[in-house]
Image (cartoon, rainbow, N blue to C red; front, side, top):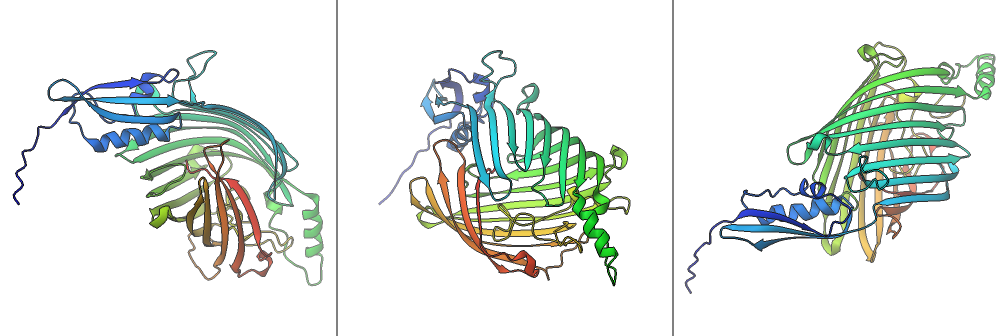
Amino acid sequence: MVYRITEGGRFRVGNVLIEGNTKTKDKVIRREVPLKPGQWFNSVDLDTTKSRLDNLQYFSDVQATGVTGRGGYRDVKILVEERKTGSVGLGVGFSSIDSVVGFVNLEQTNFDLFNPWNFTGGGQRFGMNLRLGSTRTDFSVSLVEPWFMDRQLALGGELFYRNSSYFSDYFDQTNGGASAFLRSPIGEKGSLKLEYKLEQVSIDLDSSVRILSAASVGAVPPGPPSLFLPEQGDYLRSALGLNYIYDSRDSNVLPRSGEKFDIGLTLAGGVIGGDVDTITFSAQGQKHWNLWWDSILSVNGELAFVDSVNSGRVPIFERMFLGGLRTLRGFEFRDIGPRDPVTREVVGGQSLGFLSTEYTVPVIENVRAAVFYDMGFVNGGSWDIDVSNLYSDVGVGVRLKLPISPLPLSLDYAIPVNSPDARADKGGQFNFSLQSNF
């Protein structure tokens, strides 16, 4: 058998035709299309177009096809079906971390600041959140313009106020301030983010810390004072952070393949001003594999360090903790790390390592079963990767895709496997959360 093949000529992109968008501006869609008029046409960029538009979460259906145009050209036809992008949430929730919480969420993921009364269609992201509970008060307003001055340069900002007593039984923490960032693409899948944050941080110690510390010092023989005592007071934190982010995941909701890495360096104080003088380095990563029967294997990890830039004390709100949902799920929230000799509560460390492996399989539509293994350490000194105090847990879970949210609901139960500190092993732990991979 003899095959004789005559290759056809290459096509160039003709017109980019968009249909179905009644609210979203044409330019919001066009800027996600890598195929530009006059360039060589290829099907890979056509698939990329559909993937990018799907990830915007503005449309319930996206079709991107090539249609025959005039000689030597092929038009790109994009047909979208818009869905509601604004949401208002009212409710009451309960968790083992922050007890009873009432919340109000107002979000518009396709916001347009310059379209009064409608405020939709411009591709901006606006959010306003209020959470009131027995152990927290949170309020924030944020706005992100992903294409600042019609360039692929994201500009965003946030105003926030947070009062939290669930971090510890012995102090309340209040953060109030503002942040602003710029994010620029580096290559096809990378980006560089520069963020400045100015906030007032207040630590209010419970009177029981002073009583317990005085009793410890006055004992025979005397013990050391509580490590919480120097934390009392108000701090002005001025910080500048730089992050490199690489993201090749096929989805930011339920990734089946690809990886994401986030490497960052944050400087607080020094030439930037403020009362907090620290430097923080962090490297986070995740990798996903789509295996047989649509099962997914995921690996997620982090390595982080914080140090003082003037040999002073690193305040407790800059230190690192493990335990609870998203980290070591077989241990209580923030219950892994160096402990205070008086209260026996974790005061946080200056070095952290964490690694988690998870395998999920589909059960029925919108439901996946999961098994996972977590391990990690928190050391008191800076730049310390000693793994002699390595904690670990194993568990099972369920991932539910709910019609009220594009993000899956996670239900997990985990038990400790190894706990160098016996106080941290409190038996099996149940966690639930709405996952977000943005």
